[in-house]
Amino acid sequence: MNQLEFFASCVAGLEPLLADELRTFGIKRVRPLSGGVSFFCDEADLLYAGVYDINWENTVDPSASMAVRAHGTNSQLRNTRFTMLRVKDAVVDRLRDKTGTRPNIDSSTPQAVIDVRVHDRRATISLDFSGESLSHRGYLADSDSEDTALSTTLAAGMLAAAGWDDLAKQGAAFIDSVCGEGVLLTEAASIACDMAPGLLRERWGFFGSASFDSDAWSDLVAEADDRFEAGVARVLSVDPSTLAATARPDFSRVRFVGASASSPMITRARNHIRNSGLRQVASVELGD
Image (cartoon, rainbow, N blue to C red; front, side, top):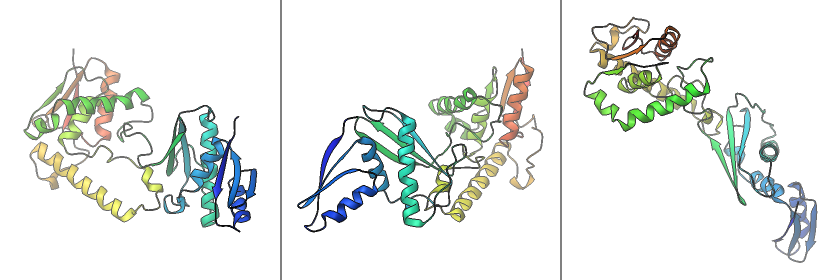
């Protein structure tokens, strides 16, 4: 791997101290000169040093579990796993040095996800505030495929393109005669009832942020709950205090209907509707 030569200038007399600091970044070929320090490193060393220099102690909660996701390659950073490990080492070392705490690494359900994207000789480092993809709606079951999760995004996009939000506010009904797993129907009913897309999610990427305010977040979730409850009541034209989450749909009031010729599909569609809290306003029935 080709190495690059650099020169870091400093005040005369401080060259040995600067050399020592560079060595803490894992740079081994360091040579103090008059007025600065000459050193050699490859892009992996530069990546580590640049990431270490970020003020992670004020960005990530040191007690949060952490994971790193890497994307992209270049001529020297050819393996995303290697890139991920160098970034992880830099963040962990910085937090340990500054706070005395080493964060736990959890690749499956981390509280903080650091995203690194390499393009040419530039690496963009971000803290992922979403965490899991927004397409993974809370009403989906563990048995649902990735294709089903992706279909929630496509459904939401179709409804946005059709101007469904405005139509729903005007009292429009929605019928999907080939509803499949009921994703489009569930998304349509959710929008009509003013349900926040991530209302049912239990984890977000910003939970691991050092600035995360759990009290403020609880207030926002409570506000979203109230809006959803009011939206359901508005669609049904009833008093919100009379709503019962487990109530069966009132077919004299239901405005959102799906049909399918497949019993297994009907079951999955009904489960999605039930999991989303929309059982009272949406129905899926057997059709030819």
